[in-house]
Image (cartoon, rainbow, N blue to C red; front, side, top):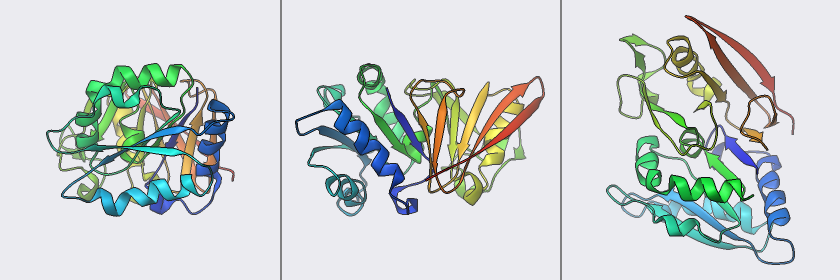
Length: 242
């Protein structure tokens, strides 16, 4: 399996390595045929018409593929059947709580697909909802600020919710650019999650096993891994390569 967790939306990806890696996995998954790719996007009053090309364009410029849009809306969940017989899954960026709400009923279907070798690429919110226990927003932990309110997703206290279950560690994104590394560190230090990874923009964490011990970091930034020991947290920095 291959899981690619991108630290920002496609507008932050300025080098080809991220989409190239996903397309390489698509070719491996569907040799000699046109792959089918489910692209999940939150749609608010038609916003997907504007944002969908940012995900579809880089794919179609690299490979002949059939794109299957899966649009989430408030109070509209994805149909689990949308992830049957696909060769790749892309989950876009936007409001993390809404993505999680829309995808949670399909978590089993997505896990099965990924376990069978379907590559998963999550951008920003799509990366944050991938874990078994997901950071979905918030800017305070027990009343203390841990990041800027602008990146709180409309939540005050940092919230950890059941995610898609693809990886066993929590994920935060826009780490250096938005200062959310401190949210991930705080979540581990305060025991909200056991361990976490915070990924910079224009950077992706690539896993072939759901384990932080076996990973690759591509792009131009860093991936910060955080592990806890009692009230303390240890941070390691992994620099990306293109």
